[in-house]
Image (cartoon, rainbow, N blue to C red; front, side, top):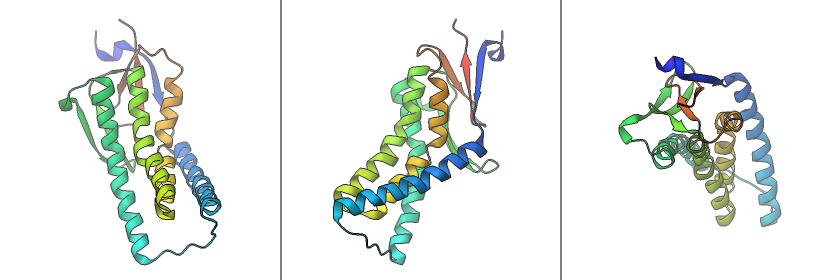
Length: 182
């Protein structure tokens, strides 16, 4: 019996739909984030220099890379998979960065691994931005939170299944396989 015979269900996300959700979330979270900033710091004046914009772009690329690294850490820490089973990269055809593991994870571990980057590369920079009064960090955090739209979509689908079923990540597509219980 092959692995395909062991598949109970397939979760596949629509990248166009996720892209639109991410775009809308980016606008809304950036606006709300800056609104909260203006209320906290009693200011509505913002000025961004060329260096600020350069810092933002570099920070965005670094945090996208870290986002995928935190998925790998989640697979290892929550799913207890060996480092040799994880990989990451960029799928130029789909225009997305990815992290994957060749081994199936229990659903409860996969859900944690999906959301770990949301907290570490989205929420944390935004909170730090509020603490140190940095509008750029707040917007950067907002963009990374919105960038986790695909992770949220998969998490939402995984909530429909028991926590002890196993989930296999597709190494090439935004797809998860829910495996039958043995």
